Structure formats: structure tokens, C-alpha cells
Image (cartoon, rainbow, N blue to C red; front, side, top):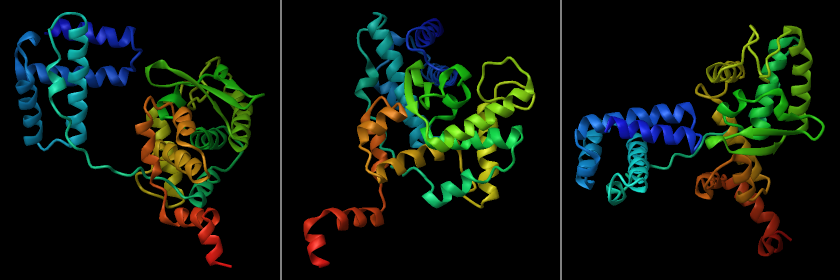
Length: 293
């Protein structure tokens, strides 16, 4: 079974362009399942998979984690079936655990503006940090997408950025004027490091900034303005999508900007607050207008 798992992981890397993070998660999930079942894949049925999920439930694992592991097993057996190693995919007969829908956290417009204005100064660090915050909010990037950006991915003249998303799928995203201004200020200071790195965002030593460092930067400035203690780069991505929706952007457009493969993933942003709904109603519904005359 280990050999087949390696073949599957090689397939994910070569054919699907999966990220190192995804490969690591799949590896851990599959070896955990292998250790539990201790069977040849040809002999595994849906009851074996259900028993594995039940064991995870008894360990008090979150439903989201159990669901992810089932998705891994499904993908693995789908590959084995496609390659002729097994005659069917037993994971297809196993239902996914129902996961409570947690609404994504986002900032208000005032909170967002307050955060954007927090980095102050015209030296390397504050200009870099401001550019990072502005770009995360302006374009809704994942932190992994932000840290893999190279200078060549920027089109300063057209205010666009080329992003490599999940599965190495590229998309072109507009950059807002404030974010573009922040990036240009940062690039002017970046020259002082005198490094030949193609990476857009650098640390103080001239190396590519890591995802962990970006998370620390976002958390540092959020605490300075007394925002949520668990604010993350992903919160700014949620904020980007939520504000677009509130201003009338359609879900398909938001889906394209976020790089979601499925529209169902984007639909979680339809959690607009009742105040916004009432405002839209008052402005748009003929009877609402009439009643106020």
C-alpha cells in the first residue's frame, strides 16, 4: 500500500500541481488510514472506511478534520480506480459528516481603514507592511499566494497582479489605487536592501517573506488598533469578498477574483447583515419607497 500511496502523491505533484501543504496533509491522512486498516487496497470496502471515521470521532476529532480525511481517501481511491488498481471506489458509498456552517469573520469598513492606516513611516518595514495589508484587502489574496509573488507578477502600469492559486492555476486580479500606491512606496524602499531576489516581499535579510511572518505582521497591527485577537490574513480575504458583495458585486465575479473552483465555496459570503439588507430593500423595493412618501 505504501508504494501505491507514493504513486498517488507523485500524481498530485506532477499532474495536479498540488502545493507542498496539500501533499503533506494527504500523506499524513493516508498513512493514518493505512495504519488503521492494515489491508491491501483491493480488500478495503466502505465498512473499513466507516470504521476509520468512527475511530476519529471517538478521538473527539473535529467534523471538519474528519471530512477532510474522507475527502483524501476518496481522491486516493478515485486515482486507484482510474489506474486499474481497484475495481471500484468504496469511499463513494460513505457520506460526509455534516459540518456546522461557521460564518467567516470579517472587518467593518471603518475597522479595515483603521488597520490600513496603522503602519506609519517611510522606511523599509512600515512601507512593506502597509503594502502587504493593502494588497491582502485590495485583491483578496491567500497568504500563500501573497508570499509566492515575484516582482514580475506585477503590472504596475495596468494595476494588475498575476497570482498562482491552488493547483498552480493562474488568475489576473486588479489592484486598488491605495494598494498600488503602497506597493510603489515599498518598492522604492526595497531597493535599499540591494538584493537580487525576484520575490516581491522580502524580510530584513533580503529573503522571501514566509507565510508565518505575514501572519505575525497582520496580527501585530490588528492588536495595535484593538481588533480581533485572532485576526489573520484570511480575515482580510473574507473582508475583501464581503465588502464586494455589500457593494453589489455578483457571486460569479467574486468567485473569479478569489480563485474558487466552485461557486458553492463563494456562497458563504451571502451572510450580509440585516442592516445592509434593509438598506437595499429601502432603496430598491417600490412599496418601500411608496410607504415613506
